[in-house]
Length: 119
Length: 112
Picture (cartoon, rainbow over the protein chains, first blue to last red):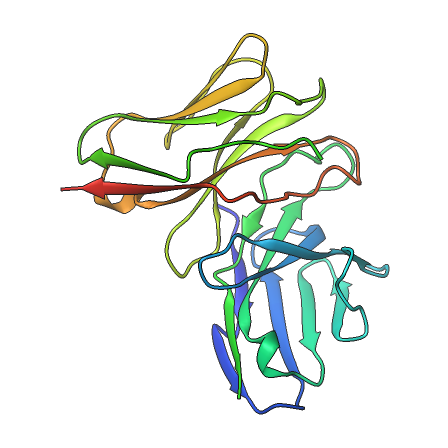
C-alpha cells in the first residue's frame, strides 16, 4: 500500500529557532500534500495544501511566513516552523494524495506525525 | 463545508460488531462520504469511502442511507486494535472542496 514517511517523528527545539519537517511519499507520486496540526485531545486542523511546483495554499488564520511549505518534487514536501515559540508545540501531520486530475477522491495517505516541543 | 455529526464516544466488546453512525443532512450531490480512523499517537488511516451505494472492503463496510443524509460504518468483529477515533468526513470533488476537514469524530473503546 501507499506509504507516507514523515521525519523526524519528534523534535525538541528552543524558542526562536526554526524546525523543518519532511514528508515523503515512498512508493507513489504525490501531486498534492496536506499539512495538519493537532493539539492534545483535539481534532486535526488543516493548515495548508501543498501542490508540487506551485505555492502552497494556506487556511484562514495560518501565517504563511511562519509556516513555510515547500513542495519541490512529486515525493517530498517540507514544513518549516520559523521562529518557533512554545505555543507552536503540537503534533504536525502530513498527508498525500496520489494522481492528478480525476483522482480527487483518492484516499489520502497520512504520515505518522511529528511531535514538536518548543522549550 | 457540509458538516457531519457523530457521537462523541461509543463502547463495544471484542469480537462483536460495531455500528458507528454519522449524520450529514446537508450533504450535496457530489460529496463523497469518507471514513478515517486515528489510533493514539499516529496519523489517520483511511478506512473506506462511498458515494451512494454500500461499500465493503477488508477493513469495514459502509452503509449509506437512500437519501444520503446519514451513513453507518460497520466493523464486523471489533478487536482491541480497532480502538481509535473514527472520523466521518464529506469530501467534494472540486479542488477547493477536495480537502479533508476533520470534525471531532467518535472515540471507540473496545472492551476485552
